Image (cartoon, rainbow, N blue to C red; front, side):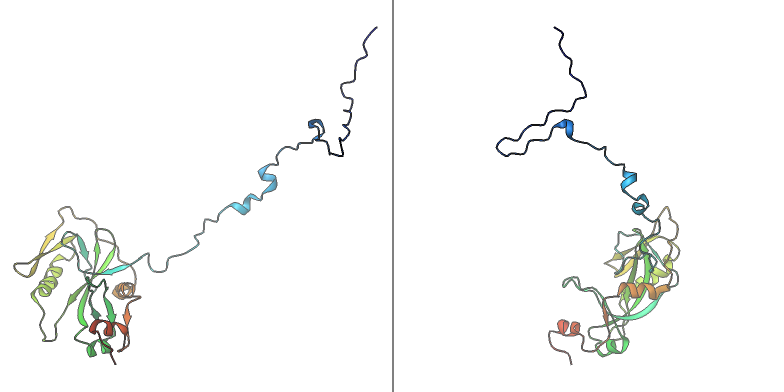
Length: 222
């Protein structure tokens, strides 16, 4: 007797729940949709970053200006013209205090602490800008030999990458020039006062009772 062939596309017989349990769905009854395309679900234009920069430098790209004389191992290029006299409280390495700029009339009232200096801008071989503060006459009206020598050697170095090496025996500076000279550096716009403002932007003393005077003297200043 021939065997009756079952239809291949006949629907499966549903399983009856046992003790009220919900039967697991058959794989045949699950409808699996293909993953959506990224281009269908996302607006790609919303993910494209604008080529326009978020910030625009307004200070010529100068991050900081240090106030210190060049080290003897540094090659530096002194600006040929920019010079300015200002009053400062000098840097104190032992107390980790950086130099502060002081309003002239305030500095003159505290001449035992403040010092008039000639600031000379220079660019280091690290491509950073610095101010060399050269002390001028002290309370007796005298400029020491080191500072006289510094100003003389600076004038001789104009237009050349040079080293300023202290000669302790003669209390002076010796000048050495780089053998293979580099191009002169580019200087920021704004002149010397741009560099001064950048160097002292958070260290400005404009009142006679500034707390730094009390800290240095160890007593309250009135």
